Amino acid sequence: MERAEAGEINSNECENESRKKKMSEEFEANTMDSLVDMPFATVDIQDDCRITDEPQINLKRSQENEWIKSDQVKKRKKKQKDYQPNYFLSIPITNKEIIKGIKIVQNAIIQQDERLAKAMVSDGSFHITLLVMQLLNEDEVNIGIDALLELKPFIEELLQGKHLTLPFQGIGTFGNQVGFVKLAEGDHINSLLEIAETANRTFQEKGILAGDSRSFKPHLTFMKLSKSPWLRKNGVKKIDPDLYEKFISHRFGEEILYRIDLCSMLKKKQSNGYYHCESSIVIEIL
Image 1 (cartoon, rainbow, N blue to C red):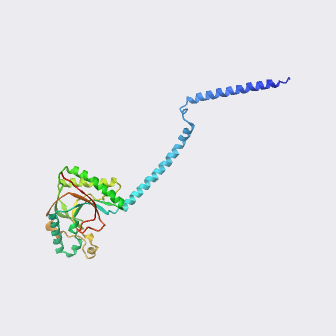
Image 2 (tube, rainbow, N blue to C red):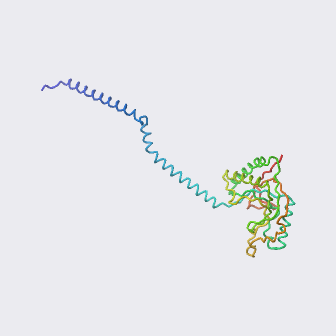
Image 3 (cartoon, helix red, strand yellow):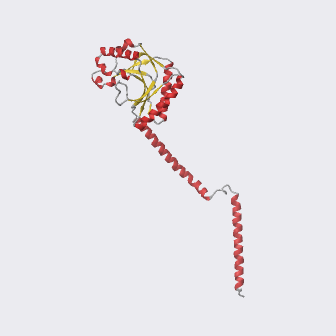
């Protein structure tokens, strides 16, 4: 067999390589044509891989969100468990006729049982509680003041330039433990209820723990046995209805809503006997 010349070998090898390259390019082109027809042809490989990982990432995020929600619920429950109101919105009672009538009731009760003098509320403290809340520091007190100021235009719009008159008539108790003068029935109660609900919502929207589980029942407290633990130790466990029987339907007078105060339950009272006041709004009637 004759040997091929060196030049011929190189020529054949080049032709073979060229043929292989051409076949490879044709195969690659055909393959790409086929891939283009498939649904995922336009998806980047990295994106495709990301699709595979997303359920795991979403699961992790979902677990983290559940942990966060659970932690928030625990904190909320702890806040509610530790909730001890120390501030309140007060409508002060300033009508001298009402104050005089209540002092007559107090004196009549004390004449029948001197021990109950320790249960009487001082006349400088007479008020209607609109809302109770918890303010733990100076920052929260300032937030409470801002919330109170926001109530002013709402109340003035609600009243539409008219006075909100609060008539007091009769005596009632809470479980024979707290004695109070009743607010007479009428449309004024609905207005007062609307103010109380708006106050509650305004404070809570600002992150303040406010309100209580009991339904709002406006009243004017004039005595409560809890003022003196000594009473229970000495046999006074309830307020006997006979003590105030003759005042059961007594008309005490009317108070016009003109001011709402943000007061502290714990700070030292003012010299006139009224609560320490952080801020007030005056209801202006046109």
